[in-house]
Amino acid sequence: MDARNSSRHRIKSRHTIVRPRSGRESEEISRKKPCDGRRVNFNYEKMAPDRSIMPRRVLPLAIIIIAVVATVATGYIYLGPLFPANSSVKPSANPSVTVVNIPRGSSAVPSAFNVSYFQEFFLTGMYPYPVNIVVTIGVNNTIEWVNQDTVGHTVTVLAAPSEGLKFNSGLILAGKTFAVTLTVAGVYRYTCAWHNWLAGQITVKPA
Image (cartoon, rainbow, N blue to C red):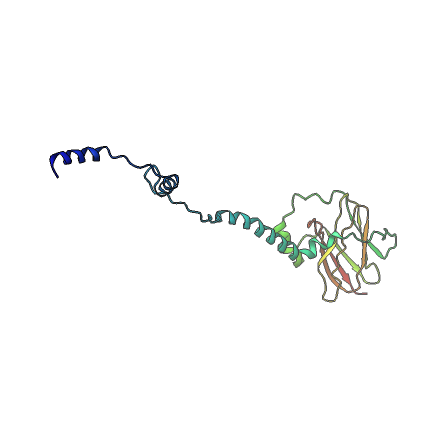
């Protein structure tokens, strides 16, 4: 190549015109190489659920289950009395009936009442029962409770002779009565299911 052709070649190389690319080629280049020169990756995987909220959902459910189990376990004392007692029994002047009055205001907690002391000594006979009576079979062994209070109470026996009746009055509404005849000698200890300080002991003597 002579000097003229070499000079012509340099001029041609310096002013080479680049052929415009078609629209499809430009689109392919745009996808392959972003204009900022960085490689872009798109991750379409679903994000895993946030498991940190699970304990907050489980805790209320656990509390509900515990509450249900505790209620069933104490159902004898706390659910049984919800049924009203027989209100057809009226106070009687018959001397064979021993009447126990539940005075007005009995639902108020006495200042000297100690629940721990009650739980420890109630069944042992060492508790200072507000009601402590002695009856004799065939003489005055029918006991009647008269509710003179403004709220309902129960007579729930928790200790009785082996062949005796472990009765539960149900809810004795205000102004109503409940009566039972005890025919088995021995000691009966009862309380109100809702107001434990209304406790009593009945000693039944044989005829």
